[in-house]
Image (tube, rainbow, N blue to C red; front, side):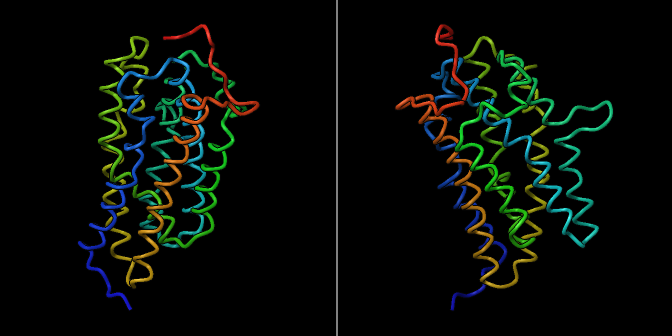
Length: 247
């Protein structure tokens, strides 16, 4: 029988998952940050990623709906506020739509999600169902990819502002607030899972959950690369870039 990991050892295992599997390593992100994407490819990325952003509050609300600990519910409410916003303060979803607006995408087409890649829809729904159906410990652990998101956001903003003249700081305003939010959320979730994973089986479940979440994010980029880079097979009904717009 495997021995129980110390909290520090569990954190090391989790960070190893991120170093090996986080989607900052995906070739599509190298293209996006390096200025190698066409405008249509950038649009396809933003449109498909919108679905992930829009489903986060549903995922978080489902977690809160079965959480009996008021302290955990209070902490998790911050995530809903971050994404949904409140009166007079736009949340992350609205700021993401500022990105898709700035890229020239029709807002109704984006929010309808009718132009999604099938694999995007499948991957995001798999994530939402995972959080709804697995243990509360696994549901909390599923957000631990936020431990690695701040660096990719910094790279994304710098690369996109450098390489795409149609991208402005205002268009990328979604990313301004995310690093401190992600660091706050990741610190809380990491502390919570290390405290509540009290058996080796539970610790292994936490590690497996982070692996699953990395796979979700990776598979979304696989789908983008397959449809819009190589071999360039866009599924029926999915977004088709304007062939005359080569920027």
